[in-house]
Length: 403
Image 1: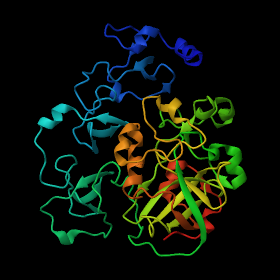
Image 2: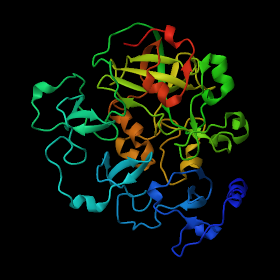
Image 3: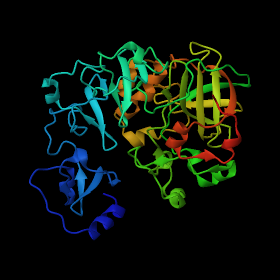
Image 4: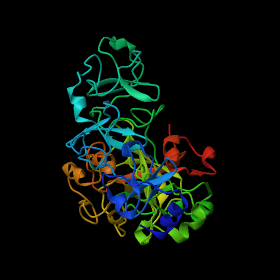
């Protein structure tokens, strides 16, 4: 355990050891009760730490939990709900307290709700107002969450034309209520460019205050601790803490992955020679994705990028020059070739579960296109992108809107 956290823990009141063992006990600290509902306060080489009753405790998901109780085999906490938001080969999943959790096996014994879209994996909507349609059926959005439209609702109650031909999984299910995006986006002319793909887990260059200030942007691209979820906020000491690709402990945040807005429009993030935090509208002009459009925000730059070159961030797209993923997630994952990454959708299962969404996007919406050419223009950044990065160009309000 690192000295920094040891000194902090020494200031806390004495802890009581427990009889049931976990990795924290060997260091003189107790295990957190109900690890799935305990907030991660700190992470180091030993694991994740939380605070209970004013004392530090180790978060060990296998402690106080039978590994066979839920999806994840003890590597994730068990959910307190039976409502799944994602299903893969391992089982059913949900998100609680900002973290993935496994649906309890006992939930499978509960009768499914067959009265609405989702077959029991989602709550039924109280209204018949449809905001999204896919192969699973019709969906509404109530109380900040997705719900299934009841089968008894008449078809004419549908109020939006936004549709997709994919199935509602973690990859295709909308993560935000993206309004005003046309199903068939208008054509435009602009400069010609090229694309590549990457995901190296490294701290982005636009996370440095000096770089965004020079680019004329407010804020910096949000960076995260090793868990990929806890924002790193001590920006004045970023030079000392350093990127995970340089032996440090700051990384790219997990949520900076691409996603499909509809069949023809996607949002995401890129490394490019454009100014930090500016957004570009790309129209793909070659390969199976030709005709589709994507709005991307520049979060990173690099010496291996030429002019009019957009390196799209997508998990499993290849490390490129740097590899921060091995130090962030450990060596138990197969990331594919260093340049190009994995080759099939099935290989997304070899990546950390938190990155599967963006990996599968490549083989679904992006149709596994291999470095397609583009036409591009600068546009205003959608709020959905800047909400994730926390960075907005100062002149953004004067730039053309995408739609």
